[in-house]
Image (cartoon, rainbow, N blue to C red):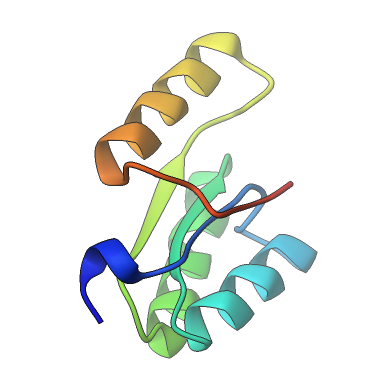
Length: 90
């Protein structure tokens, strides 16, 4: 499967709780996952956990989506990583 054929999911709050579990599940199923977290330590820890099960490319973005400048930067980073998003998990 080529990179263009992979299903792409963006998961906000992927650094803990349901967001982390959703990101892990999608990554383990072969989805191209782009995760987002706002706490640097939790985000780094979650990134390791998700990478350990990922069967496709995975990226983690550090951003506080309550801050408009961070949200805009995160959107730009996502656009630079992929040309489409199949699923958005908030």
